[in-house]
Length: 171
Length: 171
Image (cartoon, rainbow over all chains, first blue to last red; front, top):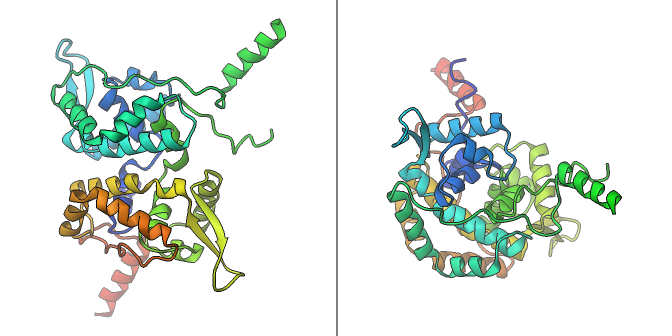
């Protein structure tokens, strides 16, 4: 079967469904976010962005995003042997989706995002989106948003819990 | 391990990441869409909405959406033995995310959505969102958007292809 596993069935003609076929998973939009607002552009930076993505999953997602025309690869302007990922026009057009996920998450979940930052972003959607797009156009923009810290009392990974247990023992 | 598999680790404090932990998959937002704009509210309707979701996957997604406080269950007003799904306040707040996925998909992919409908929606975001929310408040609104037909030349499922082959044989 040629291309049988690569070629996914389009489920319906609904654009929401077709969009979710491209980016409907737990990781793709985080890579888009990293490219969009953090100024990350290398495999290593995505891997170390604090989400704990496995390298094989990251590699698969990058491949899929490239196949979908959401990201492209280009040579580093200073070191020609280095390859950088970059959002395409189609990729930067995902900015409103990422922004709405940010606003929704900050409103309804316990996150590490400062409320005033989010309220300002939600109130100035158009301005924020224009700024993000302007940064993308400049090719090497400063980070637009820093990584947020995990919220207090969040469910921690095993490693952190183990450290906590050890600390308690030492008290 | 009590609740070990249910309890997912929060990856970072970023609201985008936390949102994707709740709805970052290929199906959850389609259920939300069905509740939001099509007036669907039963398991059977979700299952027959043209996306080909398997019943076990649908059941799992409904359970997760309920656990996340995005949907609730209530008794049917006419037949008390029947249960209906309904978006919560948190669920209807996903309307901007669904709308942006719709606009992005329609702009960049081959879909079955009529261009003029999408352009009008993209140009009147606030009005569209207010209308969707108003319908939700009314509890039993008429469908806001009909299902879109698959685009011409889309990749069809095996079953459809098999039917086509049979038809050709019969000619």
